[in-house]
Length: 349
Image (cartoon, rainbow, N blue to C red; front, side):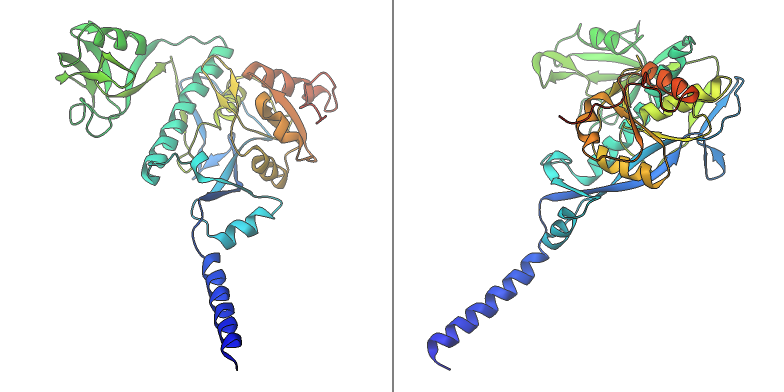
């Protein structure tokens, strides 16, 4: 074998080895695939997913399915190529899912908190739709980042009741009361933890978006209370996209009759306490999951309709912008499953 032939052979072997090794190298992409489908009218570990105590509930039938997406966070080149050609998977840059510098644990915590917030928002939206007013409101600490002024003093679950001796009624009043001080000042914060009321002193710092504004370094949410209890049991799903289906499940349980007409209805969408439904990610994978579960109707947030219709699914895509839209559509479809009065996602042009 001549020297030139030898060189070409060695180079070819090295190229092949590098190519094979390269297929197993990690790439900055994640895959979305259809995830589990869960009936909000069903049970989790033998207990109702939505449980209401202190208020009459009514029997239901059919299913109101929340849909999910499964994420494969660590892809190699071979896996990315395989998923790229798959008809039921989507490959997207990981930075769209996980901002640079954010750890997996931080993402998990954010998704868990978003799910808890969506349950509160869904409850508020559903009960507002039924004309049930809250009997109280509390400002609850969501998170206390390490190194923040309140770190080691407050913790998740604390209810902030006063600042400087003045009552905190909502997040705006909390911000206003802390804002009466200057960065570096010490403020007295009263809070309730495990049924006991306590007070702590926190040295404020400048806010990141305005150096003149003081902050105590906590994130909070407004938790409303009602004359009865709504409990949502689900722990293995993260993010806010189940909000709409939670709200529909609550309404169905608290009203005579049934929203489903005995059929399997699926959907997705974030929800605000006002009832406004927002867009979500992974709409195509969620529709595929709903089809596999036997759904006949899929409730699509208005902003997701363009991507949803590209699927050309066998089930009906109903466009919704609010909880009221979804309720009106389901009531109409009970009477006439083929009704043209229900707003479907418009076909692509």
